Image (tube, rainbow, N blue to C red; front, side):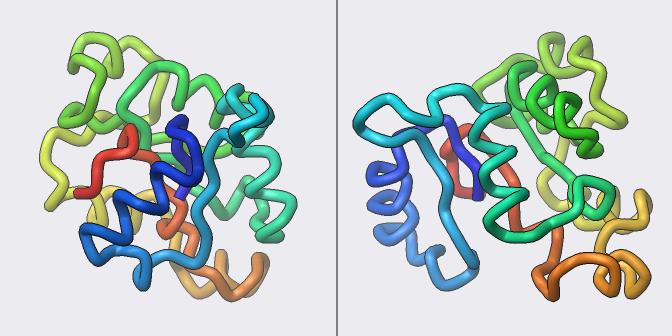
Length: 138
C-alpha cells in the first residue's frame, strides 16, 4: 500500500481494521517529513519491492496519486469513492475512473495487470496489492 498518510498512522488503521495480513508492505510518509511527496514515495516502493512500472497499477483517489503514477510510467485508475471528487479524478489523466470498488479487480485485469506474463517479468508480488485509496480501507 502506498498512502499519503504517515506510515505509522496507516499501519495502526490497517491493523485495527484487520487488513495488514492482506498487504506485503505499507508505504507512507515518515515522521521526519521524508516521502511526503507521493511520486517520491511511489518510486521508493517500486525500487524496494522490485516492481516494474510496466507491471504495476496505481489506484488513487486524488489527482496527485495519478500524477505520481505518471511520473514513474505506472498505469493509473482513479477511484471516485475516496477523498477526491469524481470531477477531480476524472480530469486527472487516469486511464479509467472506477466508481465502484467491486469493479476494481475487473478493471485491473482488463489492463493486463496480474497476468502470468506480467508476474513473470516482475517479482512474484501481485501488482494490485499496491493501491492507494487515500488511507481509507476498502
